[in-house]
Length: 343
Image 1 (spheres, rainbow, N blue to C red):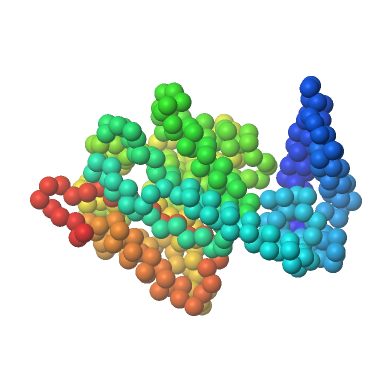
Image 2: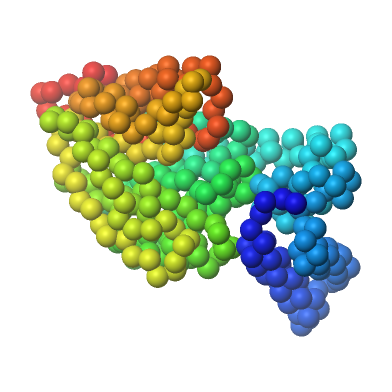
């Protein structure tokens, strides 16, 4: 039987059943009702399989249906090996479309705002990614640039769907046209509450969210994410989490950390696909090695710093398969007048 969380799957199925019943009893009634009744029957059958202990068993070969496919769609009854050629081609087209849509959600690279300049690298392990990366540039020069980097629990389609959900949610909450701009702590607290209320049990994401203003100071909070690396003249400082991952508890709070960035300083944000990447011999890359590479390149242009970090990572992982999505973001404060970047 597939190793899935029965409470999580059951909650997802019961929510779908509730929505279908609401549609069928709507006044005026939904027309035609046939497709809704058919879906309701499939949901009821899936819940019955949960009760019988046969949920996640392929109806064709009696093998195991893939966990990520079940999480993305709990009505799946056939494993990948038993799909017809037409079904496999359809699935491949869906994955390619999902990849195209997800790539279209990525922000522009080489973002410039005042003294700030930001570069990032985003490398999915497969067709789609569960990493979240976004930059929201304010409409006015006296506003604040918002930067976001996160990692959804899980892999594959299920994680990519949540990544898309995070993108839409933060874009909506950060849109000043919708009302007053939220302070960073309120932005994360509101996002966490919405995420809790709109996802299913067991779904969560780690995330760093921050803002950069015109004064050279960054403020950010970390929802259970890996440490940020502040690359300074005198070395690299790790800055840890200030709260729990998004989606665990709707009442979570996030303390704001403020970091003074001097001209030439950089802040590195990354997902565990970077720090936990293994060599062909099974050795982990690690936060320390990334910190050492960045620390030797204070005042470097963020594009060049990013390239050197990725080059060192690729050297370490040469000959090994990429098992997780990889995202690395460099937020750099430009030099003062009279000191040139190595551009």
